[in-house]
Length: 218
Image (cartoon, rainbow, N blue to C red; front, side, top):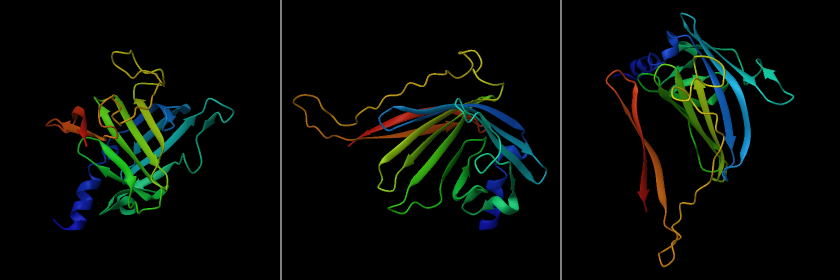
């Protein structure tokens, strides 16, 4: 298939070309040691325009900043096929160095187009659970390759936080802890390494059916 056709097919996976959605989010960021750096509420709104989609992010900070609805981090932005669809993924007007890779049904990844050695690197993975819940996990590495920040965004389309009943929504827990991947048992060889990755499975309709954490011993 020609590259142009692949780009067009990828663009059509963007669910917000036809779906209006306002995600109400709880945004948490931690240091590599598990220390909570920031927590705030936000809204990520998508509205189809016929030629694409408009997007806006509204931040509700819990300090003197209050609500921020305009500016370089808020938009609104207008996403169109002509401006944003490329063979490398879907570009965002505010971050041309990043690209969005779209999977059928809504899951996606926002990541660096290129990550040469000696430069910072960031990525965010979006996953859905049913029609009304979404989450994203973000990771930032510094230029020297060390982990700089972890983020978790929990979103509910049914209304502002707190999320719906615990059985049907997200918790508000901000607890996190760092765990060493080195074996340290007495009498055993130390320094062992483990690689953690995620395996996702989708159903026939393109919805997320299962997520597994995989651990590989080295």
